[in-house]
Length: 209
Image 1 (tube, one colour):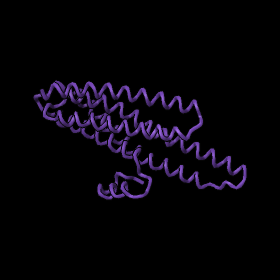
Image 2: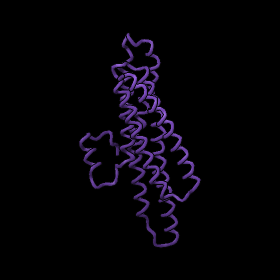
Image 3: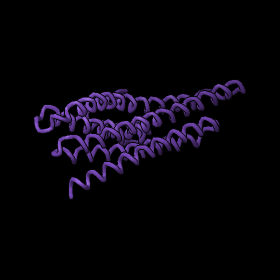
C-alpha cells in the first residue's frame, strides 16, 4: 500500500480504525517526512533571495539532501506496515507438525527482525534530518526560523516514536547479538538527534530573544 497516495482524511481514518497497521512506525516515518519537507521549504525560501546570497550554496546542498530524505521516509512509511503484515502472515502458518512449527518460528523471527530494522532505519535517517534542520535554522532565511525550528521538533518526536517501535519489537527477539547491535545503533542515533535538537533550540531562543 502506498499511503502517500491516499487523501489525508482517508489515511487518518485508516490510522484511527481497529486495524493495527498503519501504526506508530509508519506515523514516525510520516512525521519525519514532514520535517524534511519543512527543511526543504526553508531552503527554497532562502535560495534566490539576494539578501541571503552568501548562503545559497549551502542551502542548495541542504535542499537536495532533504528532498532525498523526504522520499526515503515515504518509502519507510510503507515498508513499516508491510513488515507488520509479513509478521501477521507468519503467525498464520501451519503448526501441526514439528517441522511446521520450526518453519513458523523462523518466519516469525525473521519478520520480527525486519519489523525492528525498518523503524531503526527511520531513526537513523532522522539523525540526518536533525542535522539539516539545525543548519537551516542557522543559515536559512530568518523569516522561516519557526519552520526550521518546527522541523527540528518534529524530527525529534519522530525519532522517539521510532525508538519505541524498535524497543517493543526487540522484546520478541531472542537473538542477543541482534538485539545488542540494534540497541547500540538506536542509542547512538538518539544521542546525535538530541544534540542537534538542543543546538537548534538554543539557536531558536537567540532568534526569539
